[in-house]
Length: 157
Image (cartoon, rainbow, N blue to C red):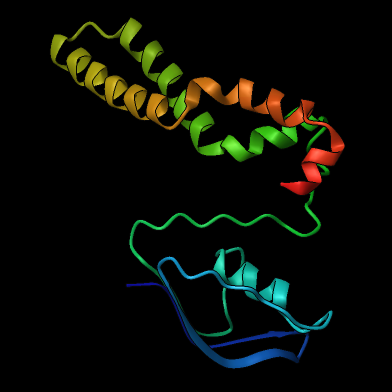
């Protein structure tokens, strides 16, 4: 089954063509390497695939339900003050769920209508289940593990 389809994609910067009319498919379970000279468009292609920027022409389609991640070659960390802040960005989906649960808790504490309260409780329960299954309660432990690994282990994987 096709996981990603790239059809006739073109990208230009400042009037210079980075690539024109490229097309390819990535199938599920494929392992793909991208090799090329500096400035040949590798990073640009990854940014397009991740949806970080749009192509000038052509289309990129991902299989429905796919989650795309992109780790920038040179990340923009100017708004991040600590290593912990940077590491927490890897858990943004879970942190959004946590914020939603806090908001729902506040709404439930104020709600007097029984029907609305029940709907809020159901939404909270669904969010809590997903948060738990996806490892929401392990965020801090995972951040600490990342921070405490010796340097020689970090580079090897």
